[in-house]
Amino acid sequence: TTLACEYRPGLEGVPVTQSSISFVDGQRGILEYRGIPIEKLAAKSSFLEVAYLLIWGVLPTASELQAFEHEITYHRRVKYRIRDMMKCFPESGHPMDALQASAAALGLFYSRRALDDPAYIRAAVVRLLAKIPTMVAAFQHIRKGNDPVQPRDDQNYAANFLYMLRERVPHSLEARALDVCLTLHAEHTINASTFAAMVTASTLTDPYGVVASAVGTLAGPLHGGANEDVMQMIEQIGAVAQVEPYVEKLLEQKARIPGFGHRVYKVKDPRATILQDLAKELFAEFGADDYYDIAVEIERVVVRHLGHKGIYPNVDFYSGLVYRKLGVPNDLFTPVFAIARVAGWLAHWKEQLNHNRIFRPTQIYIGGHDLAYTDIEERV
Ligand code: SDX
Image 1 (tube, rainbow, N blue to C red):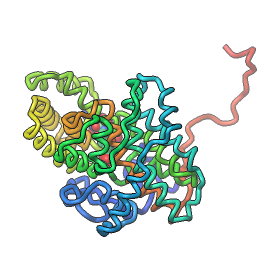
Image 2 (tube, protein in one colour):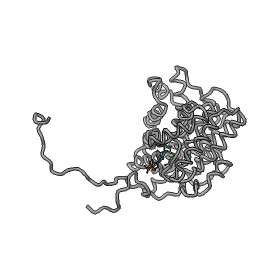
Image 3 (cartoon, protein in one colour):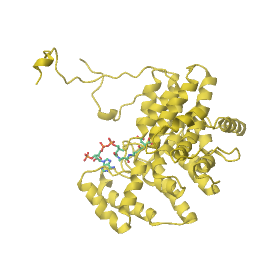
């Protein structure tokens, strides 16, 4: 068989699409959304403004943003049948599994696939962006045997998630911090969950199944699940003085240290730098604890050992410190990542529809040929 190109494990370095949604320079630590540096968007835009930019390719005017926000507000409530479905989920289940089930279940209500209809696309974008935070917060209460907290119309997108989670209106700095986190996690070229979304979308299924595929992919510890593992590591270490022995033991075991390393970034992830500053700001405002110092010490020790291999903190390393200070429980860190990344998944789903071709790669076959069949009586 003549192969078009050689086999690349994990498709490392293999372009699978042409896209103008985001750009990463892994050597210089650059991330741009639609050509705009992430630092500018994190400082000046809201997450919904960034989601609009990613999906429709332009920053919305004030009236376009207001209309978009109004539509999101209108579609925010979680469907009572999905709420009742969640009541059957085991309380000990992981919220990422509850989110994957709920996102797929949305498709039961809207699975008409008018993919060539801009109104259908906009409606699917609005519903998924609007309902996913509400479903994440709802499962948190349902698994404790309580009713979900209804969103408030006087709270913006990020503030509402914190309100639905903690049942109290957040401080403006808390809401702003979460909003920046959502912007930072919204999109990152062809990462595993976005690629899963693209492969699923390429069969022209509905966007709810596309998002459900992506949620299942993001849940893994090598991808979005790392942020929860980082917090567990910090809690296990417990003190700055314990960092060096703990990390050196992990290195001896050739373990992958959560929150470090990246397929593309060979320098510190620019998002980690912004999140680190955000964590510092929150600790200064709401009281510091040694988790921040432990994290900084972990970075120092890991980079001393692995920096020469291009292993530095990635987006998952400091995000948990911010979420914890915002009162988000550890097992909701990855669902919060998913709330943001829905924007990127939908942007690639929409972009791909313009030049869709079903993903169907090939393989290098290494098995046998025309082998004998052994009847079951003779099998040992
Ligand atoms: C995200 O792709 C994206 O853009 C993802 C993301 C996004 O926004 O969508 O940025 C979000 O998922 C961030 C990554 C979160 N994951 C983790 O923090 C888990 C720990 N990280 C590693 O598992 C790893 O770095 C990956 C999965 C992130 C990247 O894996 P690669 O590119 O396949 O690299 P690799 O596993 O082949 O490792 C290359 C070398 C190996 O050393 P050698 O065997 O060649 O000597 O680097 C070493 C690895 O041992 N290495 C690590 C390490 N990551 C890589 N060693 C220790 N700790 C680590 N974390």
